[in-house]
Amino acid sequence: MREAFVSPRLLKARTVLFSGIALVAVSLFVIGLNQQPASAQATDSAFNQNRAFLEDEQNTIGIVQAVGNSVVAIRVESPSTGIGNMLGDVPLDQIPPQFRDFFNLPPAGEEDQEGEVPQGRPDIGSGSGFVINTDGHIITNYHVIESAIGEESVELVEGAALSVIFPNTNDEAVDVRVVGANPSFDLALLALVDPTELPEDVLPIVIADSNEVLVGQKVIAIGNPFGFASTVTTGIVSALDRDEIPTIGNFAASMIQTDAAINPGNSGGPLLNSRGELIGINTAIIPGGGAGTRGNLGVGFAVPSIHLTNNLSSLQAGGINDVFSTRPRIGIGILDVRVYPDDVRERLDYPERGVVIRTIEEDGPAAKAGLIGSTFSVMVDGQEIPAGGDVIVAIDGIDIFDTFQLQDLVFAHSPGDEVVVTALRDGERVDFTVKLEIVPTDR
Image 1 (cartoon, one colour):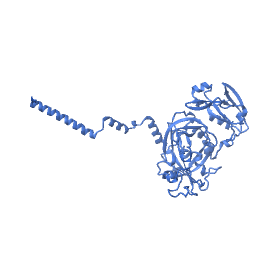
Image 2: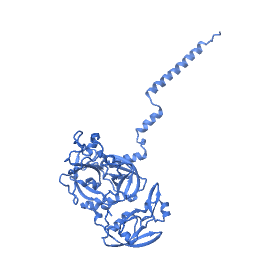
Image 3: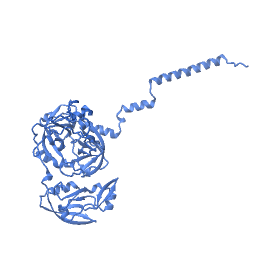
Image 4: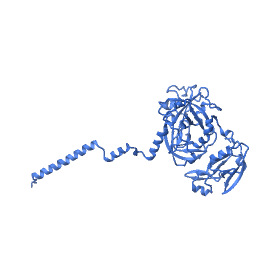
């Protein structure tokens, strides 16, 4: 067998080469133990910088930081109604402490033998509200504070108390009073008993024009769901002019529908656009199958801000203002033409502005005058929208652009007055003389 011969010089060179490779390998191994890959370093660095937030995230964060302190938690204490357990079939001993506080339940173990809340405890309600000016005026829903005031007065009933808690104030309650209330639009105006208790970091929320709201635009809801203060949820405007919700106020209001999570306690809180402006007051959710399952199902509703704008002066004037109990109506269910996409509107031969009659009150003023409601439906983005009814384009010769203008013009009259309603029917303008009446809301 022939032996391999390696010269001393070559052997030395190989030794140096292998030693160098080994040194480099060890060095890389040590570096690897103490350093992450370059891509991981870049990722970590990015997450520590503002540019890590998407533009939409930055927008939400900025709005919450700007106006979040203006959203308050409202605590309403009213005399006991003896309602007992409001949670349906949910065993009280399974309810976490936070939720026990929200529903004013006694500490675990203090229920009676039937699992009910001992009678005589004051009822505690919780809701949300938001500051609208530097005088400390706060807007909320009427139904949030309804149990604490009389039917015909904004004064607190005996045994009732009303307070708010601002964020970042160590849960210190501040007493408030009710200035004015409007059950018809589910609105109430509160004021700090001591205006000097308004925190310095509170920035009043600007009221926007909800007539400019579009389906699909981003919305932010801030409130106090289940007593969890300063909770923020986001979503989009799912639909407009929803008037099929019978539990809002004293009439079927045209509501903003949103998929932003809204739960019990969110009522009265603001629904904001991407500029941080108010476009609606969160007021309702579609409940589940029972009281024990009531919660967000992706369908929430808000009172359009235009109702607040139109009624703010009467709220500031004070007292109860139930406009629909004394004002005349035509007796119709209506829908803005603008909710129809352009191509659908063109096929239906509808104008760019006006109000579509969805329904007609039987034997109401409109029905007696000969106006007609929708006769069929069209599908728009998977939803049925009524069509085929008369489209109101003018009242007494004044052009009608939307439902709010129509309401204002009608409310400017008295019961028994006659108005000329101009409507488009099959593309032709037709005038109808309508004698206004106070149409019962439960007709």
